[in-house]
View 1 (cartoon, one colour):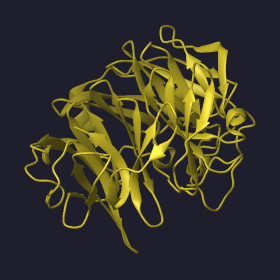
View 2: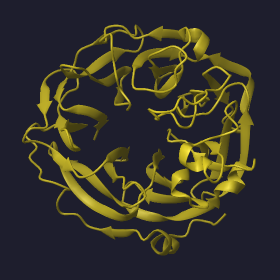
View 3: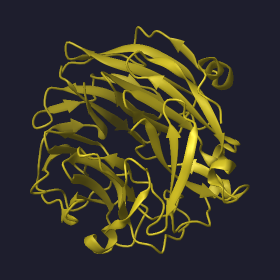
View 4: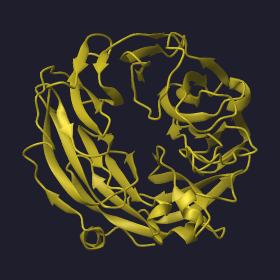
Length: 401
């Protein structure tokens, strides 16, 4: 394992830093505001994202027609400090990153980076941790790149053998799920897949366990790994509550959850929530929240911390499923282990992303319907949703600067 070294970043990944005086596409923002919504226009041949601004998520409407900052290619977004980072994914080919700040209610493009595509981009403190580790890339190492979120400066890079991290004869892949920075340690869930031909299909012999890696920060030196066998693969988030407790959410599905042609087996264990001691970074053997039982047979897909002991969950819409876009939303209290389905939403929701923003105990969630796309406001105490901002475009991400 190498200590982070800024010089090795440019040689190893070919990243280049540049100032950006203009955005990826034309800027025509006509609705100033501090909320930023990434919305996509769809056609029979492609999809194009636009970054839109709005003064409120509770009312009004915005559109991608003639407004917004166009984003070229497939995009994901991370907010760090007072910037939004827009990542262009190149499917193994070179990608790019553009940063944006807010000036008088309008987005302004700043510095950009060019280099290898990364498949996990996570907020750690005020920094952005970029991870290149997709098993399909057929690369021997997991590569970490750390970006200073305030200054858009490259802090460095590190790498570790994916076989060494796995430690079970397979190769490791860090989950595309929120990664937690706690007590100057990075806690990163990961799973393992069979080497060789198993990489392309994400095949694994270890469905019935949750694996974690603990790295020192910011050097990204591996300190230890640990596992828990009460649930399955962790692909649904790890978060720290205000009182310091850490919770990890396991969907207990299969790593290849997006296949439309093959039905892969799921873990025999239930989907659930693990509690992790923030000081020792080990799971609490006395705590387990069985989400499958609490929800009537469903599994968690994604999670977002609200406040106190409350979390907002995206659950797979069908019981005993851990794939597909059909979605239901819920509120859980991890202390009392209470589970509530959110009411007031459309009866059918198909959503593969997780466009959610939390502010003052209210959850704003983008719901892309058949006839309209709405940012619903969910009361965390009652789990009741009401209609808010209308978006002319597919809602992909909700942020605030």
